[in-house]
Image (cartoon, rainbow, N blue to C red; front, side, top):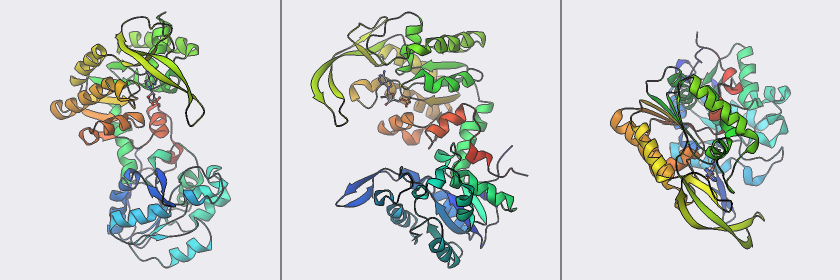
Length: 418
Ligand code: AMP
């Protein structure tokens, strides 16, 4: 059932309690917390502008970091309020708490189109516990509930789920924001009946993290391309040696079951044919986290067994070219997880080749390309290609759970379209 969205609502003069994902990266500069990436704030601007135009009184709730129920000054949302003011070009009031008299007083003085940002909801442990009394306190200033925080929708917390239920129970509306609506459209509806060929690219560290997604997509995809360290568990399952590579020996059975299902369903399931490996040499030094630092020496490409003293770090050039060719003929593409340790430029070529192929398919072939969040979004942005795909999810864990077919509590709590 489709969910109600902000576009369906008449909110003039109403207090709209809007949950946003303002969990932005911060760093300390001259004793002040400075935001190092605005993306999450920018992503909420379309919904905010629409609500301003509609004459709503907008009350924004969000979490920042993990203060674990304490008022951690470094995790205050105040710098976010200042940045939002700058980006919107209109004043944004800030409440030093998210519940209580401060909030109620500030809300009472709001005019249509005003914005009030509440302090970090995770200053209270009751937020993550989805405590009903706390949710009632938050809901005191909510005539309407809007959720634009897709990245937090997989958690049933007071501000992502509890308040929505309370508002709906009172006969009010709980609606999706424009960003949330786009996430549900691209990660959900668009993949229900994809234009074919539908090519899925899966990478990243672990099979165990992605197996539910693989299993679900085996029912939809024409082709699945596997990369990243995840590929080594599949290789191990076939008796190929993986040296010191990141593998999950306990999941070789899982890997084989996925391949069996692929054969049954006639899905073209591909594993890398070549691998870039290196020999790690202990430097005797420790990093900031106290872990040993290794020099990665003798970087080379191999096929077949990885020597005992070596470790795999990426798909090789042959695999990248083969994957790129398959991707370029796709009409729908879903990509989740890098093809290797792309953060290190020595191992980024395979991931970058896949990124370029996804862009080419989108731009030249009219394919719909959907990037399922997390590190593949980082990889595309790093390659300067972020704006050349159809859709990049803003969620990490939430995107993965949604792609697995899980019902996200923050979505389930929204009102259905009539
Ligand atoms: P995930 O969060 O599961 O999508 O995994 C992403 C992480 O896996 C990134 O930080 C990559 O650097 C890492 N990764 C991908 N392939 C490899 C590999 N072959 N060896 C080590 N790390 C890898």
